[in-house]
Amino acid sequence: MPHFSEMSRSRLLTCDSRLIAVCSDVIEHYDFSIICGHRTREEQENAVDAGASMLQWPHSRHNRWPSLGVDVAPWPINWNEEERFIELAGALIYAARVRGIAIEWGGHWRSFRDLPHLQVDPRD
Image 1 (cartoon, rainbow, N blue to C red):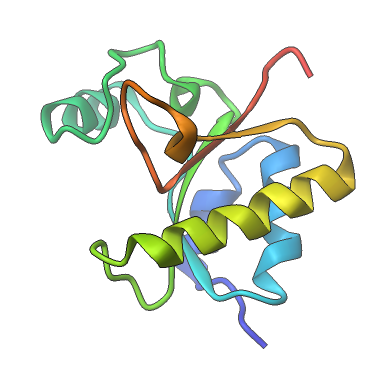
Image 2: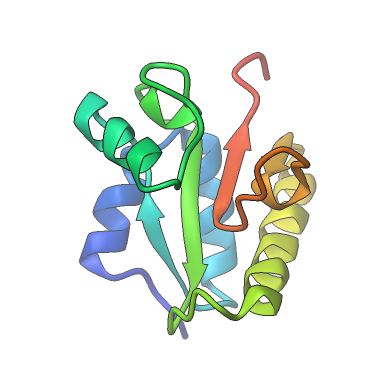
């Protein structure tokens, strides 16, 4: 059965409890890694510089504590296999619906397609 590495687990623990619950449900059936939970100011600035985010500090959901955003990748990671990111996102979205958690996937965005990113609404 798949499980989170210590690194993934430590990153996930920086996230909102709703993201922890959804990711914990899915890891039982689908192997994936947690790439990023909370981002510090420096980490957010680096993400913008690298083109991984369009939002300056503190406007990303990753910049909240606990983080309202999480970046995930199917294991083993191959950034060029979009289908696997889409499949993983489907599993996470389904798990969120089962739990009654409103979740948004960055792959649905028109202005910035962010396949690894999921976030919860802070108003939920």
